[in-house]
Length: 365
Image (cartoon, rainbow, N blue to C red; front, side, top):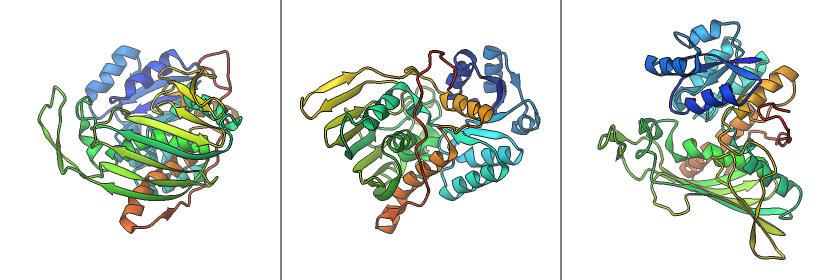
């Protein structure tokens, strides 16, 4: 049994706590810590777990195998770096780091120490994206040629209890939601080779619209609309836009075009969703039954998969090379916009094995 120590018990932690306790049978919670004691106390009451005074006490506990880093994005680098230096495997929420140089440093450090480093998003391992991968890999749309994708919204300030960090370093629509789309795309289409991007910040300040902080102003320090063209190593080309500035009726979409058909991919921020396939000879969309398990919210699936890899020595799917490539993809939109030219990517990436269907929920292959 691989034991997990939580650093951070914020908004996303609830589903991790629930799934590690009730779904994934090869990992267990060692304990939690948070800078806000009430959050750790709430987790301890609900799940009967230990409270550590701080992350360093987790690092010193020899029974903790993996540090789960679910702090705010701009804190990811420091926490992950400290955990790796302490000799712990790490699974981090997205992104690995908002800074490409820091992300490269973390990957280098983990490999030099022989430690496992991976992280979110793991939604690509769910039934929806895995079904799409199977359809593409088995030739149902022929040779992929192009794609369109976007994540469009008016921002999280109306529903998130503490939305300020979305508009600070490490936030913005690209680094908040982009990891879901980019991770799905590279798992479906492979490595990205080149990007041309444009970015903008539409508002210098925004108002919080949730009940508790209604009307409180927030400073905006990151781009809130990013758009551009992407060319994959395979030759597939397409466009992606991420925005917190717009009102849209179709807020999330990935469409992949091929020589023999078109595939509508479900929302990559979910594990299930509707997969729709149009073959050239029919010209109409059909809903395809999902071919794999984990259709519900299965966050911690990537963590459980990494834990199995630690036990067996096999590859793990939500790995740090994938995270690093996704960070470079997202960073390249801004870099291209600043340089006024296309950016060629440098990080390597190879797709790992697709998911394998098993009859035992919570047990990874």
